[in-house]
Length: 140
Image (cartoon, rainbow, N blue to C red; front, side):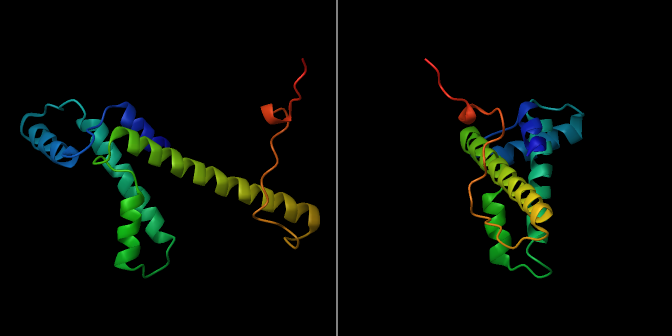
């Protein structure tokens, strides 16, 4: 996700026609060597989004269906979405990734403390980190 954010920070085309703008900018760049504003970021964004699609497809096993592939392509951020929708989707994907990392860490801690995963509740809410704002009591 960080690569997607980096691409966006370089400037990308957004909304309807973004892919067409990227294609036109590619032609201009190929013919003249000039890099139109938004071209580099858009190319980086497309490359990183494609890598995300490929990574997700690999998790489906050796023979993912066309429906699986299409679903993944629809849920990966792309330039045709508005900037707000694209950012919301990137944020959602980051949140899901952080949740997976947290689950792994909690499972690892439980397994080390209990010599296995017996009794581990994967659906339990994670405990707030020490020193987080939710652990501080209010004093007036």
